[in-house]
Image (cartoon, rainbow, N blue to C red; front, top):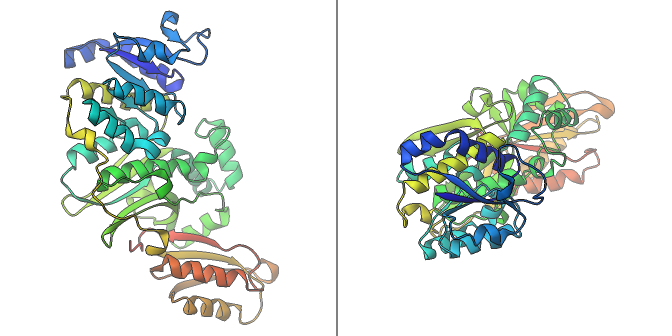
Length: 424
């Protein structure tokens, strides 16, 4: 099987090394030998260790138009021109393996339809959580399990930052800087820290878990930029750990998919997932809970998932049920206002008599019940931390709007959700 490779960065080079190093094992197990065809690169002059320079090309048609290519692996990333190249490959009947979460979260359904029409396959295990085989588990092992919830730490950068803020007491800025120095965060970490990366992965995972076409634009997301060291400390005092979570649930006949920071009880299994690791907790009435944990990024880890997809294509007949991974069951998508949770709210307030009573009235008027209150500091440094019982997002939105216009509230309220108390 000759493989055309679109892209040859960190992941592409790791994939090429795996083919070379594990070639004999693959041939023995599959009865087929894997070989690299032409490789699309930005700069064909620059050498890549262990790769024949004669294979390198800057012309995508030299890869896609090669009659000896049996399969396309895409690791170049981005939407354009990647989308057009993959469409061309699929329309030509070539199986495609991709790690491109942003492309799949926006155009996955259309690409899968093209694959089905051409009688070929599109595989994408590496697009979510790298080496963790969560897509394979959802589409094969748990196909008939009727998944009710997918909850995940699906971004290693933010998990590392929050871990260091918790474990070492670092500020957000210092933890981010450390993550960049160690290679866990990009020079421009925006897509990770604002939640967009996690939202793309949750769009893919929820589409497969719930047999519904969920796109990136359907997933509301929040990042971790507003979380301060004091929120980490306060959460610990309350018995929680702060994590950036992707949460997808079946509720009221529809689907709720969101990404946001959340307070996770210290004894919860997700609370123990530290550093750059990822974890996905799958819930089902059939199998109860299954949690998959492992590295969610890295060249070698991602390449291993890509190679696993290539080997699956070797052993799977064309026309398999995997082509229908994003089949639409017609379930509506629920907006944030239709979900509910318990909430943590931190307010910087002026230390005046009656402030707590005024805030309590705001919550009561919004129909929210307060479970606990912590008061800290005095004068200009006074703070109120309130934890509510379960209430709707719409009610909390109304409460926040009312608090923002109070003279006694000095800064923007900090809002986090409690995982254990989530109702939908």
